[in-house]
Amino acid sequence: MKKILLFAALFMAVYTHAQKAAYTFGSGNTIDVTGHYHDASIVGAVMAAQDRFGNDDCALSFPGTETDYLRVDFHNDFNISTTGQFSVSAWYKGGSPAMGDFESLFEKYDQAAPYGTDYHLALYDINKPLIGGGSEGYAAWSALSPPFTGDIDGWNHVVGVYDNGTFMIYVNGYAANDPQTMSSLGTSVVNTEIRMGYGFEGLLDDVRFYDTAITDFDVMDLYNDNNSCALTLSTIEMETPSFTAYPNPCSDYVTIDCTSLITSSKMTMQIIDVSGRIVFTQRVLPGIVQVNTQALSTGIYTLRVQANNGIITEHLVKN
Image (spheres, rainbow, N blue to C red):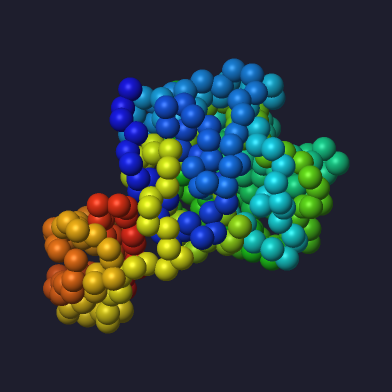
């Protein structure tokens, strides 16, 4: 059994203000680590399993039935209006190899809706990710279908985003479809439960729900995050990062001001490219640091600062 870390690195400060529920499944636990108390209960036979980093008991295994899943009681945090926004992120491994099988990773159940949900993030037709709901259950399909080799192998990250009538789906960090417009989100104010892994055969991990439409940058950050399996959030929970980087966009140098970050020890500062590769790392004391960026290729990077009480990130653009 691995140790549970003291902070949840993957639930970073840039997301916490909009994050309404999150499940790391550390030690097989189904609590909501955001502190909103949307804890899940296990229905039937759902078992703890190894996650994508090889950590024991840090993911959950589902047998592919409609009697074995996770259930979250109704709360207004999950009620989304047709003109509203939400995002769902999850890591999964497996899925049914059969055409026509619908497997729900995350759904707001509604028996009265034509497809049985107000909204859902799911797999369909040999593991093709989709997001939809209401009268238009298959609003946004993934153009990228994760490979099925006969062994159902490999973890995949999927994010569904809804924004005032428009759906997007992301697979492994990248948009997998053009924005899809639908006329209805279903009866999204019905007081019904949330279900995870309903009819899904495989492993599920790091499930998160936001009441906002997260950006392409946020999706890439989520895809590149390391999994801590922590059962508490970081003690740094600001709505904006506690450091500044300028100029941004930058050319030859970027100055990083960490004077407002309260910490008594050295911090680790990293610059990470869109593929997740660390292109710069340095241990620094709180203060103002200047970094030479001349060797960086033009593009978008993640600037990550890890202090003794959490991790904060900011996007950095190199011209």
